[in-house]
Image 1 (cartoon, helix red, strand yellow):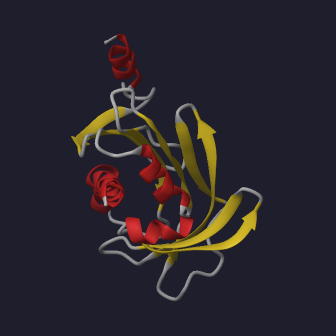
Image 2 (cartoon, rainbow, N blue to C red):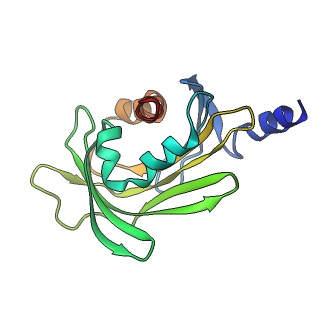
Length: 191
């Protein structure tokens, strides 16, 4: 009982974030816009039926992300540097041009599991014709054992798609799009 109470307290909104949506056994929070206008997103999920090891396998397969997430058209490792991989991805955003990004991806241990982080160094120098270089893409999935069983999956994202994107699409991605991303990961782990 005490463990559950302590864990529930830990699930409160991160400092500076406000709750915007609950679905898929996840709570989505939005932070305040940074100096560049980008709004950080954070989601906290408890999936009681999902073994954390299945999530670890999916997350650590950088090139397999295209098979898990519908917004990732392709994901290819272009370079390795020790434990880090530079991954070129093409993202599909409905209603706008595809986005291209190169992100450094790495895994590090955390208490009870692993964190899978990524960060872009800057826009892709020459995106394919018709595509737009993503300006900023960083975040993580933190996957740990939940004290009540199953998995706790935390998702943090700071994403500037670059180019021109209608405000309604940005707002959708920050709420329903984030939930869709968590649903896709959960469904892939349930197979």
